Amino acid sequence: MATITANINDEVEETFRKRVEQVYGTKKGTLGKALSEAMLEWAKKKEYFEACMKLLDNGINMGKLKYKTRAELHDRH
Image 1 (spheres, rainbow, N blue to C red):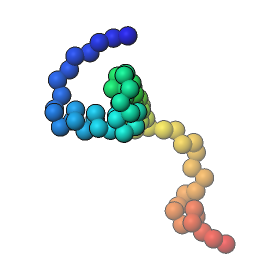
Image 2: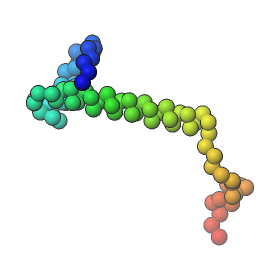
Image 3: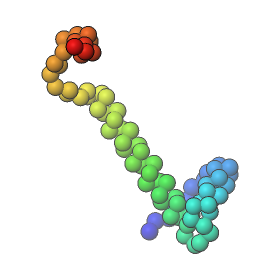
């Protein structure tokens, strides 16, 4: 278990604490549980975003084109 000391905006803290109380109640440890969940979700979101950006930078091999023109693709015979 780790201890983190951080300074945050009073409004952010108040909003977060209210939401934690709504979701988890007022039991001991709920704030830490919610903070852990929020930090993990933030990290996953950033990791996913970076992976998407890497795909955009590197491009994606979509295989060989089967149609030469857009009209062929949308033709309905």
